[in-house]
Length: 385
Image 1: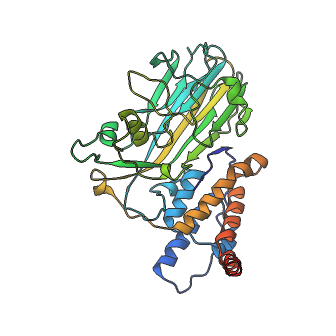
Image 2: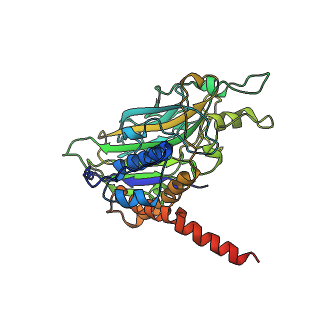
């Protein structure tokens, strides 16, 4: 199963909270639950097509929250999200976030790199400050094993577990007390400098297959097909990514035949795909599949917000674990919609993400709805003779 990373401009649209509501009829408790899931999604992406969507497909709250956590991870309806996989284990849900200010360096260029991870004591953000000299002409957080001059790092200290808890193996049973998986990771960036000095461009990009962007030259970064390039302004630029392989949606365990560094990357950096930054003090740091580059007057500022939604299972997480919903059909619908969303946004940049997502959900629901299943059944019955 594949997902697309999302890179898009935030379009602030008025949300229509009105509209006719579906009539409540007789049904099971589960039916009420899935209708609640649809309602949550529509509350975030807009309610204009709520009635037609409700008739087209059903989502459990878990599948709905999963979709919201990728499209609009800052929405309160995304809190407590989970992956509606099958089987669906009870898990502890959490989210971590970082807020800070990046600065255009002395050479008129600045950047932010995002290295999503599960621990509360490993840096997930690297960004430039005023004394960044831009000698490398690339987004390089480490130079010869040390943090690059003019670059700061930030950590999501509000996540519940440390790297030791997540990646220290029990010598007897080859297990750890808690393992996690990442649902989504997102970054928003907004120019906050003076109007007098507002100038330059901002480029936002999330690699669709989670390749490492650390060390990428500025010219190569700007040439990325899915990169969103626009004049620096007050409107936020957002990048978001989620799992792109089945392995990235799974809880990871130690493998006896792998070396310690590979275990470390896989257990702590779910979106690294065994890529890494440069060695810092002998410890590998996970890849940075998301980045923002900006140009302008040296010293001008860009405010950023990073958020990640995660799940944990294991003895250290059991006390706070809550139930999950298993919804393979709903998961397939959300996956299908998201797989087309990045291309739809690139081809229709002036349309809001909500309006595009409504169309993709409707199209995906048709492909998984009763009519599609009936057509598929007729096809296979005629083919198997």
